[in-house]
Amino acid sequence: MGADAELFPLPRGRADLAPGAVHLPDWLDTAGQRRLLAACREWARPPAGLRTVRTPGGGTMTARQVCLGRHWYPYGYARTAVDGDGAPVKPFPAWLDELARRAVADTLGPGATPSDAYDIALINFYGADARMGMHRDSDERSDAPVVSLSLGDTCVFRFGNTQTRTRPYTDVELRSRDLFVFGGPSRLAHHGVPRVHPDTAPPELGLRGRLNITLRVSGL
Image 1 (spheres, rainbow, N blue to C red):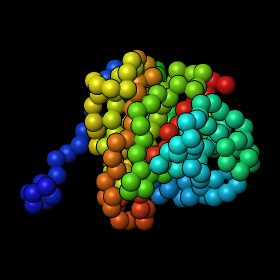
Image 2 (image 1 turned 180 degrees about the horizontal axis):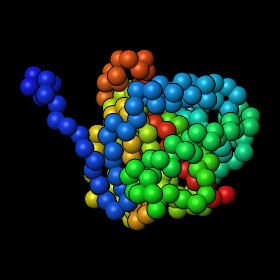
Image 3 (image 1 turned 45 degrees about the horizontal axis):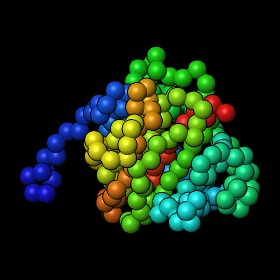
Image 4 (image 1 turned 120 degrees about the horizontal axis):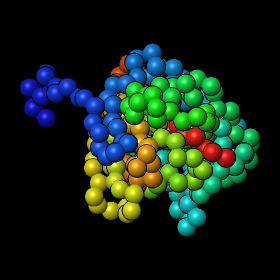
């Protein structure tokens, strides 16, 4: 990146990647980032805290995870951390439901907000070498939009199609404060994180690595 690009960065605006899939940069303000980060640090503590997810094939995910509302494990939901310490999952706070509804209204319009409350959060922590393979969020019984919030390091987010893990897909840069929402025809699109850019988090946040908070309606 040249000096001019650093001095005069291009403005980042809303991007509609596909029907129902919207990237809204800089959606969280500084206070919102700090509140969410402080909460994530508390949620990550045991019991039912941050853990390494093991796949059915015996491998492990490089991003570590903690859940609220219900505990996700490949490929279902439980009331307890069945693949962790077995403790009851932490509750999903009402303010996260309010945040998710505002996110959907700001991206897809007020008419897209679901009638049921958001009740599940999957919080993934990415270190410098962490990745997330292409997958679909298909373990819920609701088709309500998924809300994704980013804190910390910038990542490459790969948003694909509903049929296959391969092309066509679009790579978009998600930075701290960014919002990404996908619902409607894009609700079951494959997506993943092929790369994280280390040491790109806002210094004032005091976070090394990337946090991704995804909010969902379980329909369970």
